[in-house]
Length: 104
Image (cartoon, rainbow, N blue to C red; front, side, top):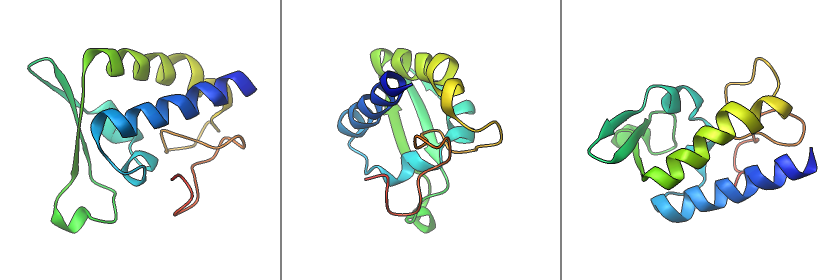
């Protein structure tokens, strides 16, 4: 389980660096991840639940490598430790979404 959490932490950092986003939008994006669209060779996620959502959704574009890593996380890693009813994509060791302001 510890290794799965470390992989999730690494993916969270990699996602933040490669997309140039703050960690905050990543906290709430499970449904947004599931409804993402392809534009050219990028997988585009529009994250509506964000502290800056009054300006429109946060736009996160993932290249193929990051999309492949995210797919492994969502299908293989996350189910091992996320609570069954949890709606956040990235979760803590308790299987719940990060508290407001703690994901960073």
